[in-house]
Length: 429
Image 1: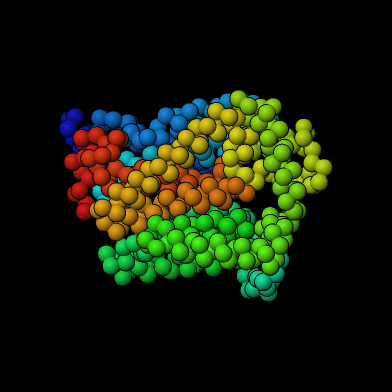
Image 2: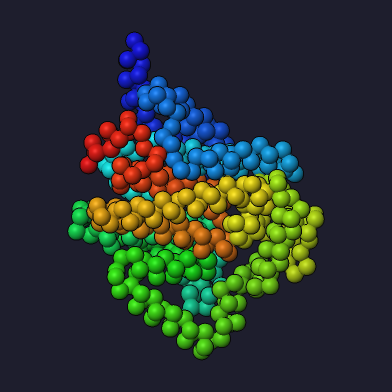
């Protein structure tokens, strides 16, 4: 009887990711499903205990993730908007549970390839539905004519902000670009078509969003990709530096900075500085608890009113690091930064170890590493990959792929691999 129960549990563990991912994706579209998504994901933890004798595979991010989760009840307790904070707290939990579902489900390289296909299809679907779902903001850049947007007809009432879409797509693009560059000869033609068409679609949508933050992140990603892929990539870097210096000389550095920093809502660079200064005031006044998820606009107007900007339409700090500190306090910021640093070092390990194993692993590692670089670069001027937006769990999904890839690229050197999983790793290769 016990063996049959364990066998059933083993079969359930092997399909874990599908129901978990489905409910989390559905909760992004319809937030009332957030509690159901959490319940479905948590049900698999005792199933894993029955099947494998453990609740979860260990990862280097376990301790900081635990600390981050502990900040959720604190932020709910002190929040002036508990209903808003509750939704964002549940969304953070779904991200964490997606991370662990991916890590525990990915036991073979075949599973890892399915994850690459999944994140690629996510980017392709988001790019394809953009003309029908984005409330386009045009006129920010003169060389993109507004007439282009006349062809788009928004068919849904709950539209997507272009900066939010750009913030998500710029995390996926490095992955879809890097794998073909490193492993073109090792890929099937269908994989090549999927990755390249997705990359092209994302490029086009990023241009249409006119999101300067995503464009800067894209420039950093492309230059870094030269270093990772080709021995002489530094030449391309030098050419880009000379081109940037020439543009600064011809156009003026102040003109370029203002063009990159200006925004119809926050104005020029001075407006952005004012927002950041208010976020710093909040960190100084609420260092241990933060102000609570999603209450930036209300708190800033009540305690730190703007002098240059309108009191409405600024729901976050326009910097992901400041925003996390504002929401959760310094302990929450330290926990999140610790996870980020672990993921950067882990993706670097996937890339370096992958170069000695296969082009596919090297390309995946490079793409995951550049995805983290894009998250950091884009996060300097925006916070749309954090809790207030529905696609925020996608960041945790990418982190799950990083942790899973580290185990698979070199099981013998992985500090989180136990013997039971080790015997299963090569079955799908």
